[in-house]
Each structure stands twice: as C-alpha cells, then as structure tokens.
Image 1 (tube, rainbow, N blue to C red):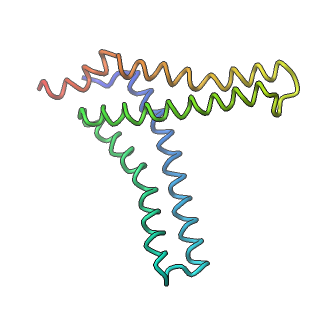
Image 2 (image 1 turned 30 degrees about the vertical axis):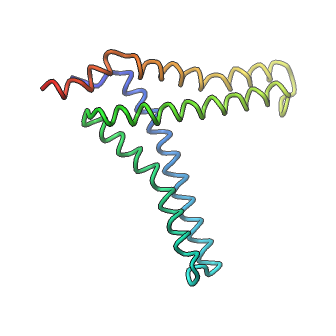
Length: 153
C-alpha cells in the first residue's frame, strides 16, 4: 500500500521540525565545546558534564530520525513515536500561539488595530493547521491501513 498524502504532509512538516532540532543541537554542541575549550574545563571534572550534556542534546534528533525510518518501514512503533512527537510539537505550537496572541492584544510592536488583527490571525494559523493534522493522524483510516498492511502480508 502506498503512503497516504496526509501522512506525506505530516512527515514533511515533522521533518522541518526535525531539521530545526538537528540544527539547534549542532549549534548547542558546537558552542559548548568551543566554550569549554576556551575556559580549559577539560582538565577538571566538568569535561564529563560537557560531553554528557552534548550527547543529551543529540538524543532527540536521533530518535526523530529513527521515527521517520520506522515510518518508511511501516512499523507500528514508528506510528506510535510519530503520534507522541507530533502531539508534543502541536502542544508547543499552541503555547507559542497563546504567547503571540497575548503580544498582539497587548499591542507590542503593532501600530494599528489592523496590524493587531493580522498578528492574532498569524498566531492562530500554525496551531489550527497542526490541530487539523493531529486529528488526521489519529483518526485517518488510510493511515491506520498503511501501518497494518505490513502485518497482513
């Protein structure tokens, strides 16, 4: 069975968030090693802490990449991981939207009522799309059939 179009859209958006996490982890690890080399922390016991925190930052991108691989392999564990990560990303976008709506209603950086209304609409756009895609991910029969087609064979 071919992958449904809705799952492709979800995977593309999930991959964009995964790219953001990979980029953030890379810059975090790079800055931690650069900072620790300039301070000379490697001679003390703080070097293990730096390595531990750097490896901790790399766990999320690795698990996200593993999720995408499992989805292409049609494994149910990939679907479960995608649902977990997608729910977390949706929750984060909703929190971000509430902050954006608060800033728009307070008038921070907006000079007119039309700009405030545009700020509210813009802040609501991503969470509405994410909630709609979350509903599709959890309720679509095509997505369920996609992951069950491997176990039937």
